[in-house]
Image (tube, rainbow, N blue to C red; front, side, top):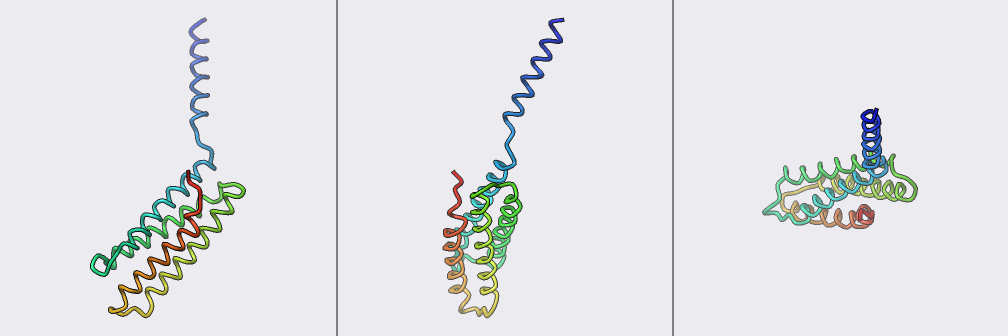
Length: 141
């Protein structure tokens, strides 16, 4: 008779422990936003550190694609955020996404070999500035 009671108590304790360890959907979304934000920051920093000697078309495309993928992850997570945080993330993601599209468009048009380095550096600087003004303001601490 003691054995079933002990098993029942152990099962109940385990169930409570597992429930307490789970993350809410909002916590998961915040984590997803912050992870994507950190990856965007890394890619923006890589782009701003490029020089004509170190830049490659494939490398730049890889950074830009990674940024676009991370923006998609942030957009996917927005629905699980609440209140002011949700509004802040939506506004920042939209503004930064528009800036990325504009910069990518300007870099891929009217590109000459002589102006490529200058244009790429300018675009990376604009992207870094836009990041600081938008996604960089999201609190991930």
